[in-house]
Length: 85
Image (cartoon, rainbow, N blue to C red; front, side):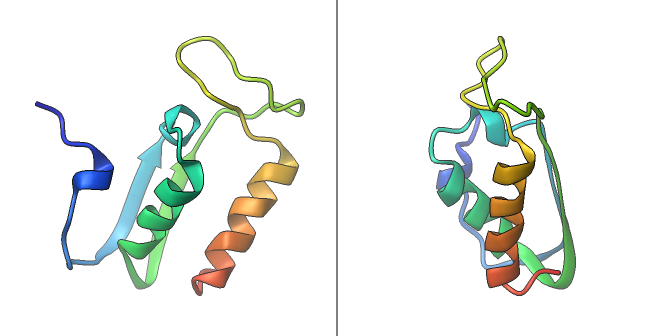
């Protein structure tokens, strides 16, 4: 059975965390994004891809949202608050 990321518990930190076209499907996007950030070692990298739309209207295929320049800047600000550049 697939594991829900919110049920994944480890104290291990990773040099790189990749999240490819997932965040637009997650209901609790802020909680999800923070969990991603907390799994990255200091000096590590988070690579995240998502669908982009200047209107932020969701596309087909189970997307709950898309991201615009404004909403991507919001995520970047969250990352900076956790020490990311």
